[in-house]
Length: 173
Image (cartoon, rainbow, N blue to C red; front, side):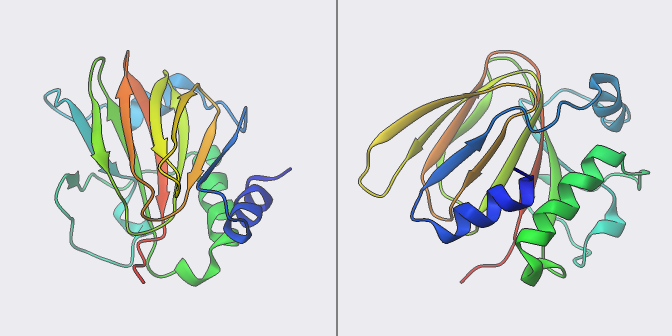
C-alpha cells in the first residue's frame, strides 16, 4: 500500500489514528544534515523544510525558518504522497521537521487539522485518545508513519534523539 492510499483510507474511515509500519527509513546523516546549522539544543524544535515549500511567508510560534535546502528525494516523495491525499491543501500545507531530545516531548494537546508524522530517526512514545476517550499507547520506530485526525488529543515523549517529518494540512474548519 502506498502512503497516499494509506492516508486516503484513513480520511474516509472513522478511525482516530492509524500506523503504517516501515514506510521508508531515510539516511540518518541526510536527516541530521538538515539540522546542521541550528545552534543551541532546545528541548523540542520545529523547523520548516525550505521556505519555497510554503505559501505563507510568516512563521508561527515554535517554528523557525531555515535556509532553503535541496529537499532530499525521500522527503519530497513523502510530501507528494501527502498532497495526493490532501489535494485541497496544495496552497496551505506545512511540512516541517521535528528534532526531539532524550526525555523531551510534547504535552497533551490537540491539532486543528489532520496530521501525518513520519518517524525518521530514533523512537518516540505516543499517547492518543480516541473519541470514546480510550487511551492508546504507541511506539514509533524509524520508518513508521502515524496519521491522526484533527482534534485528537495526543502527547509525545522521546527516550533519545529523534527526528521526524510532519505534514499538516494547515486548514482549519
